[in-house]
Image (tube, rainbow, N blue to C red; front, side, top):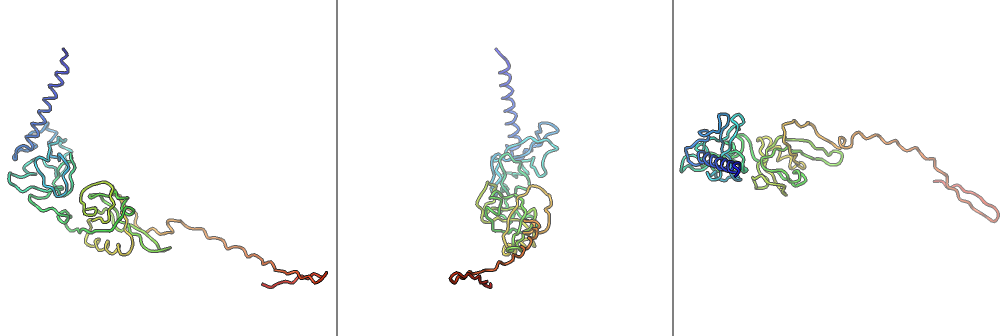
Length: 269
């Protein structure tokens, strides 16, 4: 009889039991701490979402799962203590201030205070304002912009040769698409709510009346070239067309016959 399959099965059962024990230690009792049962001195156990948690939903114990992380890679704001995240029994729950995907760590920046009411206004960075701008699939990257993305705002205004476009705001955070604050796929959005400074909120309101706003999706911190783009930049410098040479007019003549006589008469133009 081969012992390898039996040993493998025993090891698997032991590993599963160890994981279950750690999960109970981290989330099973209100006063347990994740750091009380680290797998090694170089690792910590942090609290992650076991399912998708939508914006505004309360954070419940049954929606969480422990994750083992290298201690030097633990993100700032991650919870290693169930009590700090969930509070003691009877405490009003925290709520998600943005959508948290299954498997993502729960961070302090993603949850509210205990019992707080979560609205778009409560998620604003201090000193900023929320402004809605009109968009469509042509001006919003085909509808592939979701809450949490950062965009550059471009204004196009003018007519004919005076038509011009330029970036008026950079690295603007999207708060909501229509009335949805959740991350999702392409959608036929009509409005997008963005987070900007008080002065930039006025600039956006005025820009909407002056022309058409478009959004450019970004995922970096590179600066955008300043200045406006005009039709001259689109077509480049056009070479002047030479004027046509004057064409010498050919006189019009009429032949008149009287019997055997034939006469040509020049008709003036």
